[in-house]
Amino acid sequence: MLLAACGSGSDSDSSFQVRTTEQAAAPSAALVVDDDWLVYFASEAFTGPAGTDLNGDADTLDQVAVAVNLRSSVETNLGVAARGAAVLDDELFLAVDEAEDGNDWNGGPGTQVLLHWNATVGLEFVDELLDVDEPLLALSGRLYYASADAPGVDETNLRTLTAAAPTTPVVVGNEIGAGAVGAHLLAERQALLFVRLDETENASDLNGDGDSTDEHVLALLDSTDAAARLKSTELAMADDSAPLAADFVAAGDWLVAFLVDETAQGATNFNDQALFSQPLLTENCLGTPDTDTLDQVLFYVHFADFLAATAQPVNTGLVGHDRVLAFDGFVATISDESEANCNLNAATGDADTSDHVARWVEAVEPIAPARETQQMHALATSIPGGSFGLAVLNDRLIAVIDEDADSSNLDGKVADHELVAWLDPSASNPVWDVTHQSSNRSHGTGVFDEDGDSEPYAGTSWMAADAVGNRLALVFLEEVPGTNPDVGSLNTNLNCSFTAKDGDKTDGLPVWADFESGPTLDFDGMGYAVDKANAGIQLTGNFAFFRVSETDDNRDYNADGQINDVVLFRNPLTTCGPVPMATSSLVVGQAIVTDGTVGAAFLSSESQAGEDFNGDGDETDLVVRYFRL
Image 1 (cartoon, rainbow, N blue to C red):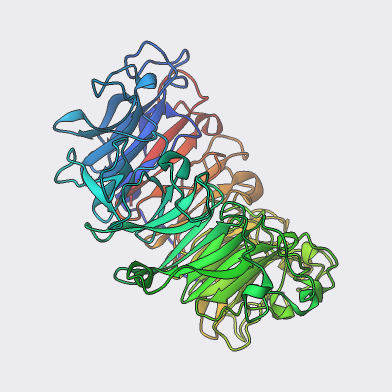
Image 2: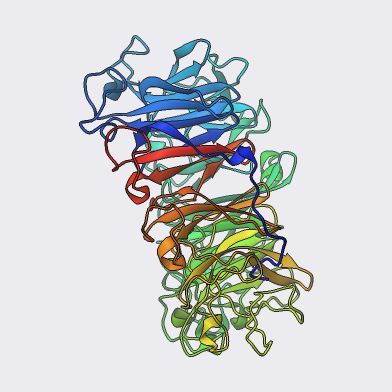
């Protein structure tokens, strides 16, 4: 149901007390929240009317690391210009470019360094970094980073640190017999590390295509095993932004999905139908195979078998871009029709090849991807939130179908909408379900007209990239059920302290969807109007946090005499208790940054609040505010 029919009242737990940091921050500066610590990067240029030198290098051009203890609220300017940070227990690590900081930390020629800090010893040098802009990844009780040190035999330049020995790097090994290799960290997914190998730096052909020019050969590393060695897939991706996915299966095992670049991998046509015993495309395209080598193609690998050398990465033949998913024995991506050389959604009456369609396949051989016409619909890939219109919830695909691009009318309404749909790929004949109303009022969209008739369709303008537990955050648009003249405005918080705010039906409401019995996709949420394209709904613990638009909700929540701001709200997931917490900002991203256990932080706009939060004499800054969960 859309609006929670639960007990009213707000939680007044002091844990949610919002505190403000002392310095201004740049909108592009990352926030790091982990355990008892917040690290933010204070902008010297924005601190004070004329800027403030916070690291003693006689300029005001830097972003300087500041540590905040979330339990004591003690804030410490670390006095060093930094690009990144990571936290292990009470040990903090900073990536620093000495040229920006004006300080020689290592007493040598290297200028990119890793520093360690804790409240007892202060700052100290740890190691030289390969690239100051690469991630520092803290997981499984270790910090992973790429060192500038040359690797030895069967070693990599990757290093780990622990909280017990924060200045003693430990070498990560390469596969036995594979020699030395330099590596770069990309990301982690469910404790599996994704690493890239650059052939130009290693002066070696690492993917077996006869050249040494590929810069993004993918390798994998099990972070849960302190003694794990790097394992190369010997397959090249397009770039650092290529999508990656891993689904945890069992200890030391993941189902891994990624895209291989045909050009980088020796100009190989991986989506050539001749490579497969089952058709890759829909019936209308069987006579028009793809013949170029310009695509990115979905591969998967079962990590434990791959590590044991009993299996290799598998080519699915499905072209993809921007998004890959791995879940419950399936892998999925988004296919561009022009790259697949097929009008995949022709069954809807669509006549072009400019759409983007969800494709999936079970991770078993022989490869047999879903290809029935009723399974092919155009996605709204430009939707904000990081999902590109495709996500997973409870091992089911959730898609945002673009009726206009799809040349379809799935909801029977005059206007085209971007509709939420779901599909179970493990079903015997999976089809997209766009209706979400059960036979009673407890499940589904929760929207009924004044005659008690169901309005089962849901449209969205924002969808999160990943589910949290058994819920997926998205925005529910009033306009879809609002096409029925007997359905009124929904941002009234109808069943929870009814408040009539505005009479229009153009707003978006925060929702945390889950599956109820049936199954029925159920849209639990609140009757408050969010920032539709930047709702930033973040689910953590038993709460949802989101940005409410005062303009759309027709209320002045931060009491500044205007209704043109965005305000951070929270609400319990299973009860009704919406609470406005503080002025937020228009910076694109999640409403809060959190580790989900101790605390959270967010950017707050002084100009929107009409208040000088950091006391520097102006009201033009973005400041970091934080609270304990």
